[in-house]
Length: 243
Image 1 (cartoon, rainbow, N blue to C red):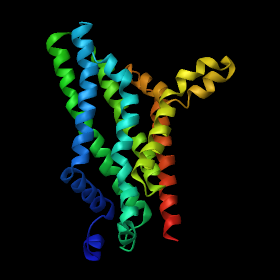
Image 2 (cartoon, rainbow, N blue to C red; image 1 turned 135 degrees about the horizontal axis):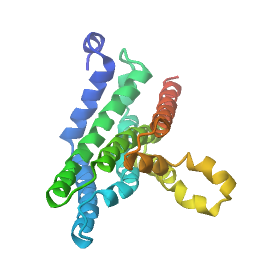
Image 3 (tube, helix red, strand yellow; image 1 turned 180 degrees about the vertical axis):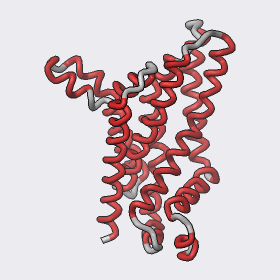
């Protein structure tokens, strides 16, 4: 990646292409995607065959938990590995800003998550062939999945930027994502007066609302705001590391 190429083209998209090339040329992305499809396929087809229901309700109900695990698995190497080998310092000597770097890596991993989820559209085809699915929740579920992926990618990048160790990056990203996903499960233990306030913090509550086919701007703003917050955190970490 030369200075001339950086100046001639948008640095964000150059970094995005670089990350995507690395993703598709290595085994990690394929392994993560394969495991995701195996587990999600088991969830869908267990409902399909064992319960004799041609629907995606079970798949979407467990999708936030699956993404809490698999998205950090995709993001854990993005900054941590570059910090470990020292290539991030070389990257930052080029005419790029910290925002360019974070945005490029964010777009790359976001595309990777969409590639990971795309084969699950086969479940929709199967449901259509063998049943009469309600397309409102299906469309809502995939819209919610897109926003959820973007949010979790931002969280995962933040975790990866904070350490040189990929395992630590994965664990931190996973913990943040799973807490946000499952926090609503523990609200029943709290007084009703604060449940409504704390439930707004739950990614699962907002995703479930969208997955019902109800597109509420408050749910979309939740994912956009949370993702933007962790994006800014990641940029700040990169700026501090440069000093």
